[in-house]
Amino acid sequence: MTDHPTPEDYPGTGELPDKLAFVKPNRARAYVALHDADDPLTAAELAAGLEYSKATAYRCLSDLESIDLVCEAVRLGTGHRPKTAYTTQAGAPPWERARADGGFDQ
Image (tube, rainbow, N blue to C red; front, side):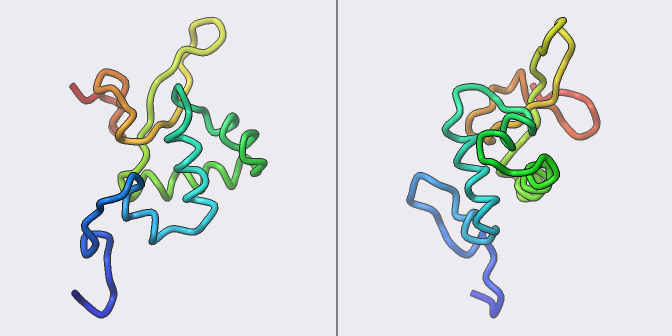
């Protein structure tokens, strides 16, 4: 192990990913909310559910996405318009995971 531990230094045996030990508490709360949700949540839904501002919700999602704990999922909104929603990597069916370049994982 190095002087500065990384998530890879801790093999997980629990239900939650070890990477959550390296994020701020509000990021961990956001992850748990997404993990426990039945469907992917939009940033606005996450913000309302956790009583965060939308800006804080987007920062949480961005941080969690950067360490591969959360991914984007396309969801149909009102009028069948696509909306960006977010889910945990474990809860994302392959046909709903959107890559950063706009394509979809198969």
